[in-house]
Amino acid sequence: MLREVKYFIYLISIIIFIFFTGKYYFSDSYKKKSYESLNNIDKKISSYSEKLPILENDTKDIITYVKNAKTKKKKKFYFWELLDRND
Image (cartoon, rainbow, N blue to C red; front, side, top):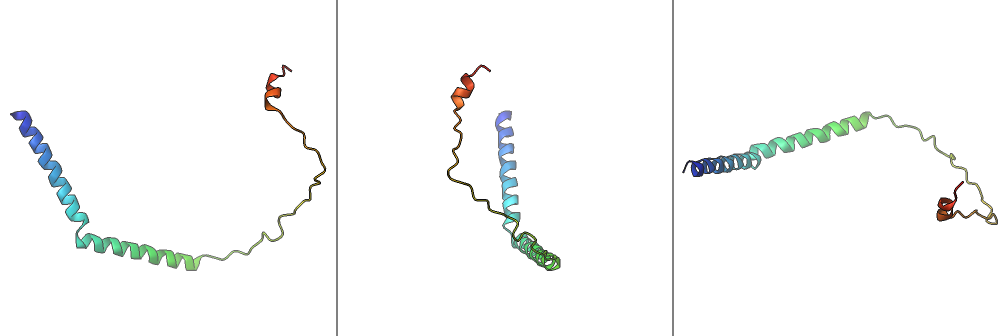
């Protein structure tokens, strides 16, 4: 009997916790606060982005292309033959 009462109290406390948590998060005051905080974050981002300095591009002509001759023969490596060697 005592065990069932204990489980009943646990169940009621979990249900009450979920109810009050849901009531708080779905309330209008919480929604207003969350939207206000999102708007404040957007305003802060826009104000910080206006203050950022624009850097000059210094990467122009930094890549030089080299033409490789296609007539060169590439050395073929055989992985298993390298393992079989006992050097």
